[in-house]
Image (tube, rainbow, N blue to C red; front, side, top):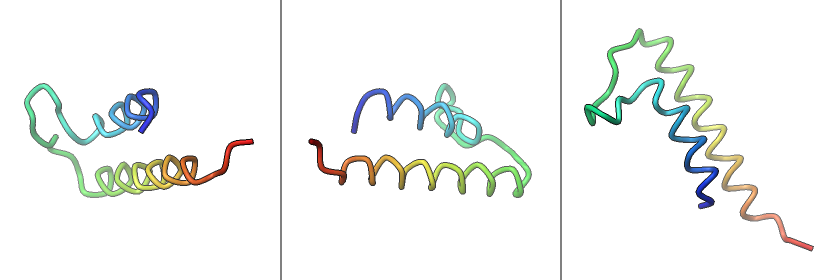
Length: 55
């Protein structure tokens, strides 16, 4: 995975995971679900970007 993609995914995952404390953040379920849904879509986009053939 590209370093830029990892950085962007980590920034979005930081909404629900505290990397300094190495543990999850205490959030309402709705906020967690929204963040995970967005994170899943981003992961799918990264995966699809690696499948596309370069010209």
